[in-house]
Length: 196
Ligand code: MN
Image (cartoon, rainbow, N blue to C red; front, side, top):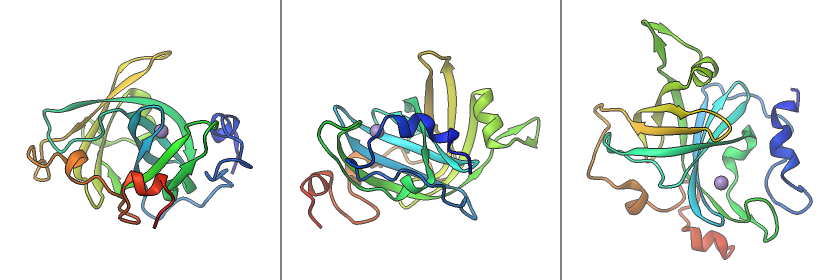
């Protein structure tokens, strides 16, 4: 696999200092996956990533996802990450890019639901067009989510919004009530202290 996809990711990081994966190119999953990583960098945010054509397309969501279709969550695109990153939980050392604790807050397979006039549209194309709809099958998040670009580069901004379907639930407040790792059960503080 060509590494050009990950040039921006690799240029930002020193792999002799950070425990993050360099991304040698893992084979795509049989069913594509999503991951949401809770990341306490200079500001707490949630990195929403979707496996698309061999990389993880990524957005930083400052407030995290919601299960309430009325919540519109700002999602700022970040560089593509390698597929191996989906399993990364740990601490990026002081002085390195994105320094701070990273948690696998939720993960699972997803399906692309994007259509145009009833015809399924590949996700890469949907993202280029600035609108995509996916069905998440995570441990915490389930159901449809829409990603919509509302501001173009250089300061590209998107919105991440829960679709109004049977998995919508305005009362859950998942970010507050389900704060821990789905991989290890650890809190961000425990990860930061290297416990567990
Ligand atoms: Mn981040």
